[in-house]
Image 1 (cartoon, helix red, strand yellow):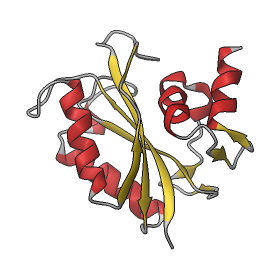
Image 2 (cartoon, helix red, strand yellow; image 1 turned 90 degrees about the vertical axis):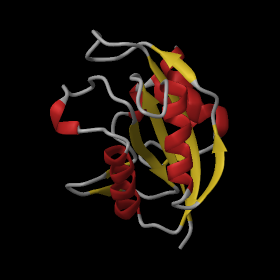
Image 3 (spheres, helix red, strand yellow; image 1 turned 90 degrees about the horizontal axis):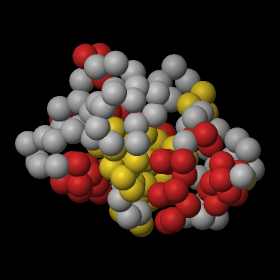
Image 4 (tube, one colour; image 1 turned 180 degrees about the vertical axis):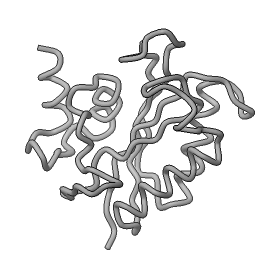
Length: 158
């Protein structure tokens, strides 16, 4: 079964591929091997949230048409992060990273396992996630809340 997955991307460190933008482009190319890329947002320069003593992030969102099941896709995204040099255990939560890939939504899937929660539990509070997502998929519905990406973004703005 094919599904459309919404994926958030972020980077705030240089890497062997170059700067933050190069990291996002490399990650997009790698994610593209998991299905068909339907859309990629523009890149948004954003201040860090939580752990603020670090460089600004470059954030984006993409839509991927894939046959992978949600947990398979999440595992593949984590493998891409590792292959690009991310070691989640060695930095503080919300700390600096060359690449961050988060599975936000996957059609109307609602799922909670030890490995994955869909919709992403914090996406509705994150402007750096909702702005790029609303840019490419304003009508995409978060099945947890029943609200579109554009509606969730508008609620943050109020």
